[in-house]
Length: 156
Image (cartoon, rainbow, N blue to C red; front, side, top):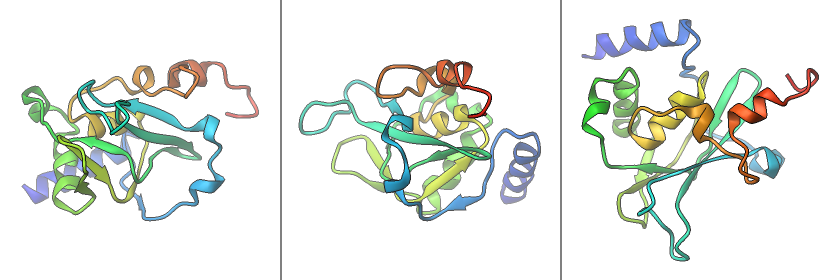
């Protein structure tokens, strides 16, 4: 199984789907708040103020960074076990990237993870197949897809 996972990771990285280079620290104070994308967990995952728990992601030079402190769904969808990102999700679960949160059904991401695909990041968060460009949203409600479409040439 370990050999299979290594080969799968090699293929995904070389196809530009996911980057497995992991960063333990970033200076979140340097991140502009208006450029943080949020992904809501299921509606029953709420904090003490009844706000839906979210994951946070930013665009980096060569992809996307899932930020530490993001909430991650614990509940596994049965259909996800056959998905290409499933072995990767299991790797993060078993290699100490997540810790239980104070909220039922959720982990907290302890270490940042870099991805080449926003869908990969979203799938790891939601523990199911997910369309990242449509589901990651800025605070103003714009999707990642809309943001990328409207970026100026200088920003790209």
